[in-house]
Image (cartoon, rainbow, N blue to C red; front, side, top):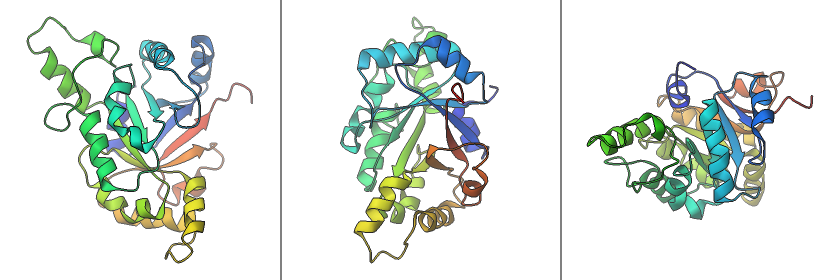
Length: 248
C-alpha cells in the first residue's frame, strides 16, 4: 500500500479491515489477505481470549506481511494499557464503550508519544521499530514522530452518552475515527426510552452530522459484505469490517 492506514483515513478514502482471530496461522492469514484489498487486520480482545505472548507472535507475522493490526482492548477501564499493547507490535487500538471525554483523553495520553501523549518509551517488538537505527542519538525522537503519524486510535460509541458527545470526542487531536457498536448501542437506547434518538440509524446520522466538518471517518463495527455496504455508506460510514472469505 502506498498510503498508510492512518493516511487513508485522513484522506477520506473507504477503508476495509479483515476480521480474524489471534490464533490464525501465517498461511491462513496470507490466504485470507489475498482474497481482498485490506487496509488493516482487526482482532477482538474484548470478546475473545488472548495472551500478551500470543499477541506479540501474531503481530510479528502481520508486521512481516506489511499489514497493520488493530485490537479492540478488553475494557474501557484498561485504556491506560494502550501503550503496553502497542509495545507488542500493534499499529492501532480501538477503545470500546466510550462514554466520557476523560476516557478519550486517557486513550490519547497512553497511545501517543512526546507532546501529544505520554506513552512510555520501550518495547523491542513495536511496529516499525526494525526500520530505525537504534544506535542513533535521534532514534527516540525519530521513532516517536513516526509513530504519532502512523498509529491509528479509534473510540467506539455504544451508548447515548457516547453519541451525544461524539463531536467532542472527534475534535480531540489523535482520534482517527469513531466506530459504532450497533448491538450494544441498541441495548443502551432501550435503557433510555426518553432519549431523542430512537434507533441506531438515527444515532449514526446524528453523529455524521456532528462531525461532518471535522473529517473524522465513521466505522460500522460489525462484519459487512460488499453487497450490503451501500446502505451503510448512505449513513456516512466509510470504515468497514469483513470476515475471511476462505470458507465462502
